[in-house]
Amino acid sequence: MAAFLAGVLVLTSLNQTSLSQWKQWRCQGRPTSKRYFNYAEGFSVAIPSGLQGRAGQDAGPERGVAVPLSRDCTGVVVVYGEPNSLEWPTPADAITWEVQTQTKDAPQAEIQRYRTRLGKLKAAGVTVKRGATSEVEAIVVAFRPGGGPVYTARLSTTGKRYKQDRDVFRKVLRGFRLEAWR
Picture 1 (tube, rainbow, N blue to C red):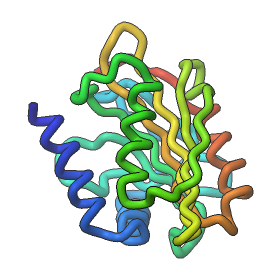
Picture 2 (picture 1 turned 60 degrees about the vertical axis):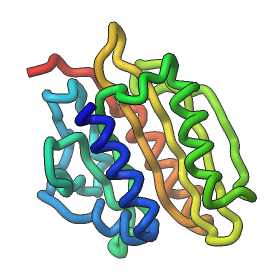
Picture 3 (picture 1 turned 180 degrees about the horizontal axis):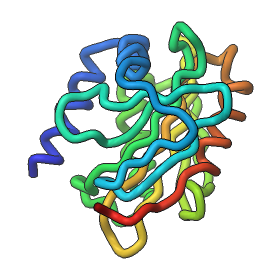
Picture 4 (picture 1 turned 135 degrees about the horizontal axis):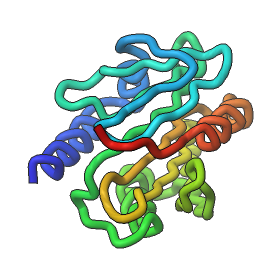
C-alpha cells in the first residue's frame, strides 16, 4: 500500500510540474559511471561511454538511475525498479496504463506500441509523441521472473533530439541485467 501511495504521489507531482522540471530533477544526484548497481531492486545497468549517471535524486528508497543526454537535460534516460503495486498481470498491461495516463493530458498524442527486451527480459514498450509540445517519451517495462519488481526504462526528449537519444536509449536497454537481491 505504501508503494502504491508513493506511485500516486509521483504521478500527482509529475502532473503538477512540467516535464522539463521533472527532467531537471533527474539530472541531479550523486554521479555514477560505467555501471549502476541497485541490489535492493535487483538490477544493474551500464552507463554508456562518455555519459554519467545520476542517482539518489528522490526522497525515500533509491529506485534507479538517470542518465542525462545533454548538459541542459533536454534528453534523459531513467531506469528504475519498483513493486508492482498496481498489480499489472503483464508488461503489456503496464504499457496500457502508461498510454492511458500519457494521453489523458495529450489526447492527440501519436502512440506506437512494440515488443522489445530490457537486457535479456521480454518487455513491452511504447513511444508517445506529443505534437503540441514536440516532447517524445519512450517507455519500456519488464517484470522480474518469478515476481518482484517491475523494471521501467524511460527516455524523455524532444522531437529534434529523438533519433540520436533513441540510439543511446537502446544501448541502455541492452546494458540492463538482473542482479541478486541484497
